[in-house]
Picture 1 (cartoon, rainbow, N blue to C red):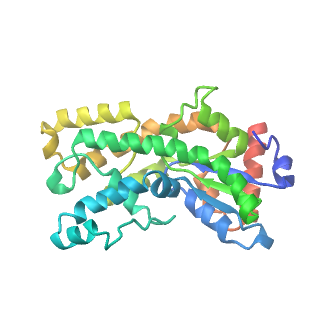
Picture 2 (picture 1 turned 180 degrees about the vertical axis):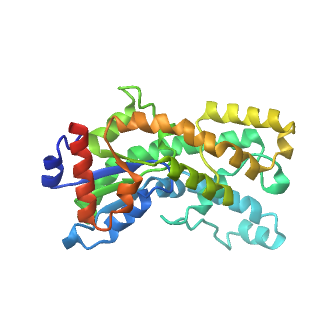
Length: 292
């Protein structure tokens, strides 16, 4: 680890931390707090959002093309687009990633907004490649943040699916090697209660999500067999609800493997963090626990 002891972290002139774990456990909340707090109170961190980087730099063109394909179906907009009279782009922010989610989509009945499964797989692969690249870009942004903007402290807010695009059990995984050499990896670990709340929240509003390819194919085949429906009659939201709890179970050991490269904090501990000073104490405790 880049901070082998709690004292090394406390005394570091540059704090560089990467948060990972399931969406909804506090990664972005902590990142926003560290970014927005005054520098004289330990804030003013550079906030690097992997999802934002994916949606703007790596998949922005795919997203814009999707919008254009829909817009060109309208005769008036078609004429304006073909004459370069209008400009179509997504407006992704750190807190609103809806354009990226919309592009990733859901498989199933096109009348219900579903995609053909092969198209869905193609978009999943695009996301996998984009997530790896955007995650590796964190190292370059650490340098840019300081050289251009004067930020000494850096927080990397990862995608919830990062555990799906690395092989943390492989000591020579190139992504994990780079991350561990440039950032302190911090897993936000949830409890069974958190898991149930995430499932309830997802049931209310299923959102597109990235899956590890083999897991996704197996899940899709299982659902088709259970429902006895052709692919183009599957309710997209019903499929996502069917798979979400299984996805959480699938990801847990993958997160645990990643945590061996860094430290672990609990979602309850994160909920108590109000200030950058609280955050630093949290990280120092986590490093101390690892040393025991």
